[in-house]
Amino acid sequence: MLTSSIIESNLKGSSITFPGITIPKGELLLLKGNSGIGKSTFLHSIAGLVPLLRGHIKIEGHGEISKNIVPKNWRKNAVTIIPQRPLFWQSLTVKENIKLGEWSKGIESENSEYILEKLGIADLSKKAVNKLSLGQQQRLSVARALLSKVPLVLADEPTAALDEENTSTLLKLFKEHQTETGCSILVSSHDNRLDSIADQIVIL
Amino acid sequence: MTSLYFAWKAIWKRRSSTIFISLIWATGLLGFASIQRLNNGVSNALQLQLESTDLLLSAKGSPTRSILANVFHLNEPNGNILRSETEELISNYNLQNVRRIAYGDNYKGFRILGCDSATWNNINLLEIKGDLPQKSQDVIIGRNVAQKTGLKIGQRFHGAHGLMEHDHSHETTFYTVSGIIYSNAQSWNRLIIGSISSVWKAHGNSDSNYTAVLARIDNPLDKLLIPRKIQEESSIMSVSPAFEVNNVLTWMDQSSKIFSTISFLFLITAALIMFFLLQSHVKERLGDYALIRALGASWWKIAKIVLWQNIILGSFAILITYGGLFLIWFGRYTSITLAEIFQKDIYWDLSPDIKWISACIALSILTSLGPWIWLQRIPLHRALVDS
Image 1 (tube, rainbow over the protein chains, first blue to last red):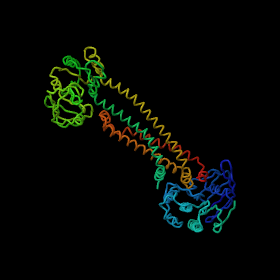
Image 2: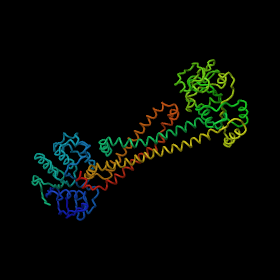
Image 3: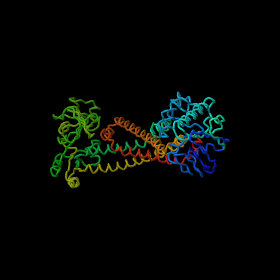
Image 4: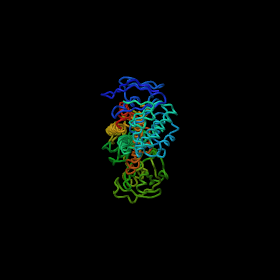
């Protein structure tokens, strides 16, 4: 379960205040709001990538972030992030990027093939990532995040580059992952298609 | 997959800058390693020739020229010394391993050296094909002489007067090759060596004098006193080759220090260039490192990748350096002198290399620290948003 009090994120020179939220175990919270309002900054604050000026963020069993003190192994064991723009090591293939994600978290996943298959990119595993379309990269980014069984998944505009069919696959996969791992998911998105699977919707 | 694998992938993506950095680094290392080999080779060559030679008696003139001519067999001697006077001097002092030599002729530019039986023991033979001289006009020839002139065992030839290739020949007196030698004291490999009487015979016994006498002195005090006494008391020049050669070595040491300093500056420049190239490389890959940090990698994991990249670059530099040393090794055949200096045992003795290889690895680690500390300060949020 994620509990976040009202927090003020420090962006070096400016700060943004965000409301307090709670996401119970196994639920999905959808974060909506206009562009530039700070949805990505909020997700990055929860991931421990942006220091806080005040407030705290707590994940049950993994400690809490307070000011600029992030518990050790926070991103390794407590959260995983799907960045807004899919980011990879361009010198690596699809499979190698998956392995890089596992190596970063210190895990060795057994169901990578399954997830890649589900997302329709299993046959691209030997392809260099810079040869993939934006939609394929988006799906790969999701696959990399879902390989770890952390209690909180942060997804920043995960459907931005996806068509109807792939969005539907992704939503099913999110639900499946939640059922299997009991994780909580925090999604920031403009996409109204996500409203149907959200347990809570917070508008910034 | 390991940090080494990901480091290698990152390096491979930037092949041209990898080669560029390694080449700069290797240039400094090659300068270092080759000067070291040159120094060791020259010192070794000089020491081998000087073994058991504490005293050199020869005609008056330049001491350096006399040493070069009679110890290293490189220059023309000052002249001859009277046999009777020399023998008297030798008997007056406590000298060991006395060797008498006489120059006279050459064959195709290679010197024919007449020597007494004591000299044979000083040749530092590594290998002999055939026999040492048995008859009066028998000679053994050095390996370089055999290679350059094509002389074979049993073949007869006649020498030309003097030490120059085109001087007039003694067509009535023949020498016979009884053996081919290979010595680790290289000057013997470019000599034709016979008995002292054979040289006198070639000159019709009209010139039965010595060119020089070499000897060992065991008593340290005598090493200083005897050369000085002989110099004062006789018409024969007496020098201590070890003393003179030490002066040469000191001079060489100074010049090699200058070269070493230049190489060291090369190394420092290479390290600085490498440092800045690595920093720009890290800057370029800021998004990459921020990504794995955001995915949960510790600083230590990132440090390992940066460290491995530098170690790979350092290893390339070491490999290129040894490639360069191999080229120099094969290139040494173009010059007899270089071949003499770059002896296999000395050249490929890798123990002195441990120092610069260790320095190279230390430099790899040191240059990793900068980017690593710098990476700790990157705002991950900004890096992820901007990538």
